[in-house]
Image (tube, rainbow, N blue to C red):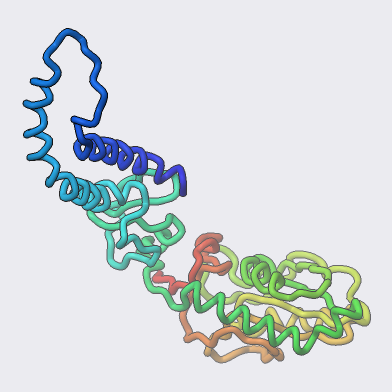
Length: 296
């Protein structure tokens, strides 16, 4: 932040120096005799200073206004800057911003690149924004701590995230659980390639070790057909887990071919294909900070 304001402060110092000079009393300054009539020169200059002095304050104020309006956006200090998503902006109008991390739609304020990902015409509709996600993740963590803190303190809690969809969700969730526990991910595929309907759950990796007689917290991104969680719950119990508790970020309102138990649910969502915050379409859009509806 200091670097961004450095040029602005330098300019203001120059303005202040000029203002100080114009406000100075020339008669009080010691003058060196260089062989010219300094008194006559001063007599000629004093009326000029007297005329200009009342203009100093308005000039300084005008400079500040011009700086904030015209130059401020390039230093990222314009008062109207916003990190909110800009709706209905043609991505073709985007021009590079004066920096590495921002873009500016022509004639509009700057927004972070992460938000600009929503400018993809397929992901313009935000279903759940990042603030709602953060608030709900905190609430889920509190509920999990109430139920499983004792298991964790006794060394009997293992968190098993379902990769790769739960990647961002589980990263935020476990950082809000102030107890020690191992994290042992498992890979499952249910939406291979460019498909928007589940083709059935397939284990992509073997179950982790060390599950006998422990409580497993199974974390997934979405409960859709139910086949992924149903498969994993059965497999984990067969591996010797004492209990399996399940946490999902989203529960889709659809008919399910399986009905696994679900203990912690972030949001109920309509039957729409959603991406962002770990959820993908053909490997894309996992890095969106919000959950958006995919228009295909």
